[in-house]
Image (cartoon, rainbow over all chains, first blue to last red; front, side):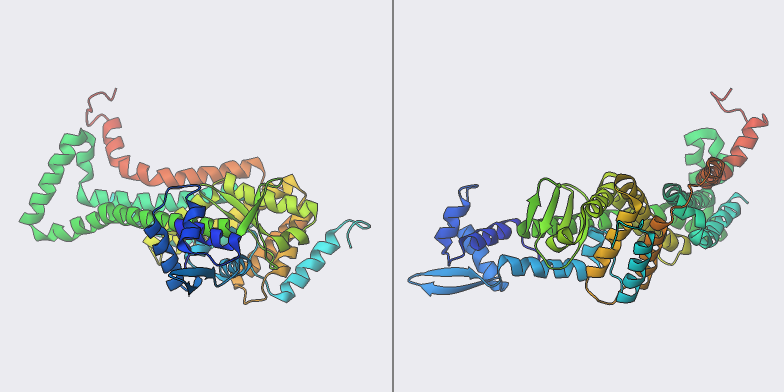
Length: 123
Length: 316
């Protein structure tokens, strides 16, 4: 999964919030509230995102209407999947609280923790 | 002579130190242990660079200041062209004194740039799917998988999944957050990155490989200790088991397995800290590792000056 660029992220956020198909002009209207952008810039970003498979589009009159292929939740799930499963560059970029363990080790450690718990408090 | 001694120091540091990797005191004094690994790494690199310098410039020239060093340099170069038998030594010297630091610097820049890029992308991706939980000062990502991690750098962030947030008790959560904040506050990622850079720049050196593995492990212990002070050791251990138990049942790395077991066991049966005299001893050894090579390289000069054979201007 390619990470989004800054403008791509803004466009995706905008489309997720709308929850209905949007034309270039719709997105432009939304985004120019916070920064000045050219029509062609937004058009290029939407076209790129479509090329990357993040957006679907269909003709409506003379303009394209864009919708996201994945919901925000699906995107986040995929992202997390990648963060948790990854080894390599991205894994070096962050520090996990705890690594993956197999079920046996978890059971054994859980037993050790419960045994150490003062009586009458824990399960 | 000096060169041989310096190379010997480097060789001993490179091969003997890794055997201390499993020393029991390291788990009781993680900060001191990290400093010791860093000292051994610095000592190793300094010894190699100085050995290279002594090969390039005869030690007798160093006492006379910059002019004489330059003169000796010129003499060395001209003597190399005159007699080819000095050439291998000077080339080896240049390799150690010039190529080694340059290689370290190149790998360092490349690693730092790549980490920064990866973190920037990561922060952007997370920002897109996370909501800030201001009361806790964390970012929450909605997911049925439990995870907690931090992204160092600027802006730094502690990230939790909603599943982790639900699974943890209040005390466990305090422990997890204190652990991640200890990483961020202590800039642990810099110590880890430095060790990775050294290993990457000089692959195959047992010392550097061991130092990287140990520093990665020791910063976790350091953060665990901070968490145990904030919450209580039992809650931190319990949080670790809870989150590990909810992670994907994928194939785990053997090393991670052992180190997590060690972390939990260590929290459950707190061991007394290392007594002060032992700390001082270890610290002294670490200092000696760094400054030993320097002293070794400077010895011919110092002894000549102190015995009055040479007079250095400004040296009373």
